[in-house]
Length: 158
Image (cartoon, rainbow, N blue to C red; front, side, top):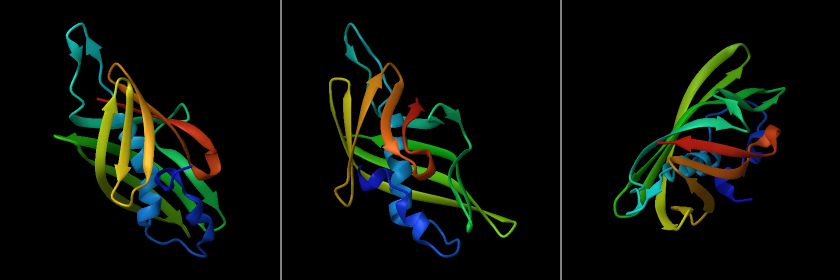
């Protein structure tokens, strides 16, 4: 699975730390899917541009625990993808990291480009990692890994 959707580096940390760029990419994939949530009509597809909000991960509403071990708990509490013309995106994920009884909120962003072919949307971050999503109406769906949850569906809506 793409690095955009991988949280495996969290397990390698001995103590809680701010989320890395790689961790942010996990959310990027999911949020990118949201950015693709648009529908078409008889005159053609609705433009993708706009902001999409993360609704669910693995059919669970936010916040969703994506990793919990002896060092702490990591939850995604919010996320969004903004698609701008002609083909740029920014994805933002908000995480809550709880360790030793203290909770910290971290927000991470990643950017890149997007392309569309029919109901398929492809997001490519600035490091070249690619995530594919399916667009249905104003809903963007993508499959990706989320550490303790395994491979799950990320759902975004415009």
